[in-house]
Image 1 (tube, rainbow, N blue to C red):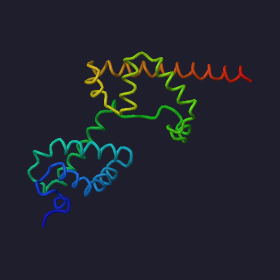
Image 2: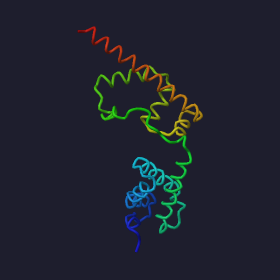
Image 3: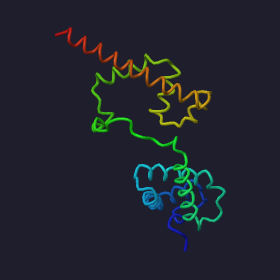
Image 4: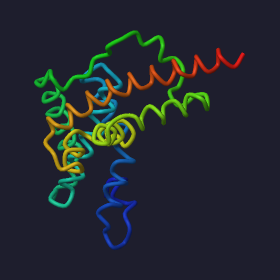
Length: 184
C-alpha cells in the first residue's frame, strides 16, 4: 500500500504535486519533531522551512521515497546542528519587545506618509537593500545577486540604510509635530 502522500499525485507523476502532497502530509510532524529537538517554536518553524527547502532541491534525485521520513529527519538534525555551530547567524532581540504589542501594519495613514517620505530620503542602493531585505524578505546572498555586489556590501548598505531611515523618520516626525503645533 502506497503512503498517503503518494496517492494524491496526478496520473502523470508530477513531482511538484508529489512534493506538495508529502509536505501536506508530513509538514506538521517534521515541525513538531524540530520543536522537540530545539525547544523553540520560532526556530522549529525556521528549521522546518529549511528542511523542506533542502528536500525540494533534491526531490528529483531522491529514489527511495519509502525512506523519505528518515531522510527528512536527517536533514532536520543536520540543519539544527549547523545552526548551533554558527553563532553569528543567530538572531537576538536588541530591545524591549513590549513595544511590539501592536501589529506593525496597524499604522495611521500619517505614519505611512512619514515612512514613505523617510524611505525616499535614503540613498537608492541603501533603499534597495532595505526593501529587498525587510519587505521582500530576501536573504543577504539573494540581495547580493540582485544588486550585483558582495554579501558584505549588502550588509553594510542595509546597516547604513537603517541608520539613515531612523534619522529620516526622526526628522519627518519632528516636522510633523512642528506643523501640528503651528497650525493650532
